[in-house]
Image 1 (cartoon, rainbow, N blue to C red):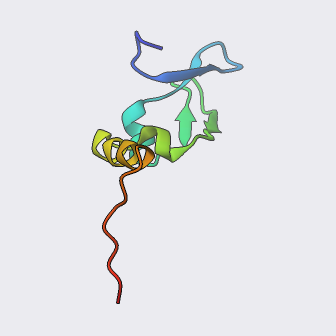
Image 2 (image 1 turned 90 degrees about the vertical axis):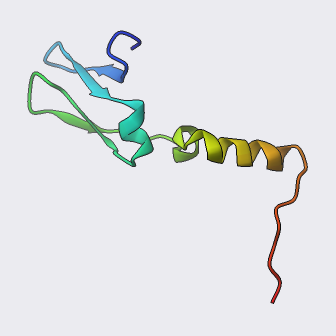
Image 3 (image 1 turned 120 degrees about the vertical axis):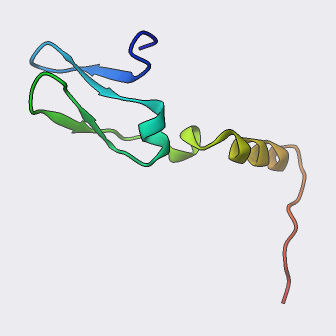
Length: 72
């Protein structure tokens, strides 16, 4: 939901469960309804919400760049 800057899902009470991208990045898994006491567990892939710097590292790996590996 662009207006709320959050991911939303309909609640049985008529309002919306809400969770922001920032909350997901911090590892939050619970979306709460602001109008009632209900909440839901959000199932998602954490990699989709990591910081951009980590996304850049992943893109480098996808392009065939091998990270440095320390061998003992």
